[in-house]
Length: 517
Image (tube, rainbow, N blue to C red; front, side):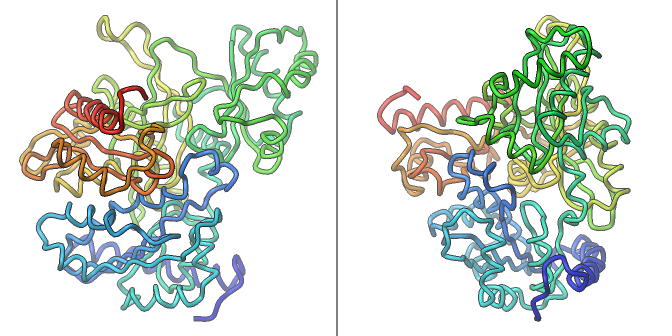
């Protein structure tokens, strides 16, 4: 296939032609999962590389999409999985042994693993495109391109170019609509959807815009304590900075703007470690951003609604989660629990669907999540309360809540019940989980994947198909170098899931020489 200039009219026309095939392909496979089907997975984190560098062990995050190997349970589905570096065979075997209902040898024949042999910081998709012979091998491994599609973590012009070079549609959002998922785009979607979100300003360009926005917010809300400055394309909360209004007391907006502008270089408190004003401001000028009120509250929560617009353009609710947040002001994603609290999960689900329906009308395809900050009108531990939900952002991609939920679904063959917000296994048993990408300790450095698996099996932590309970690990490639791994702890209720997380942490600490983390 002739290589086209990225973003050229010829490439855009070719991409549109491929995408026109996607709906029929989706209907065919959805009607009968036994039909021949090929999925090419390029788990590239095609995001701003400077922002990615804030995440420890980020080049191993390609492994988060290894849950897609479970598609091999479908007897005539082929999978081509491409990574930057060669995957440890132990990790691949670990996932293959999780398959049920099909011999692992049968599934293994339908799996092709390819890699770039490239550990550099650039996105995986860029590495693939720079290797025409690899592109050809992917195409050859896919076989019949009329029954194949490309899956990715997030979609950019790189993924569009790869889809065109491979000659298969991309089951993800059209990169032309990527602005809808920026912090500015999110606020505009929330406004159109008619849901509550924090007062603020979007499409800001530089420090003067930031200062004017902060000064205006202080004028609108004289009692406001704090506001958040967000990079348009920051993620996991690492692109956020907190501003305190203490000392901003000018009687006019112009005077308050001058006060803020003087303080900005020293007053912002960044969520990312080692961030500084010069770099943050430079990044803000490059990608723009927003300023909005920080939602205050003693007992606040951070639920999330997961949705999908399928290939036929239908908006669907997938799940709800409560996010586990950390960082200096509690804005950095560290994990999640499923399902969200019963007190408000259906409210969050409904608000997420309002967002999904707007995105569907705009032509979005694929999975995404809408995050909220929720504040009660009292102390939830003392009785029923009323919750107020503030929409914060849309993650227009597979995110930290995608792979845990799909891991649960593939392992149990169960389904989500939108009438209750629960997930039921085939036996009708509710299933819950605690998931994290951030189980980390310096003591874990040097542990190899086979060590982790041995520890897990010896201590009875490994997921058991018969009971549908246990721990599934991911990010195992990051363990030895960074002392970091991810896990999904599945139980019949959240108490079991949280216990499995605590037990896993305790076991790893004991096995690595002590309980201090």
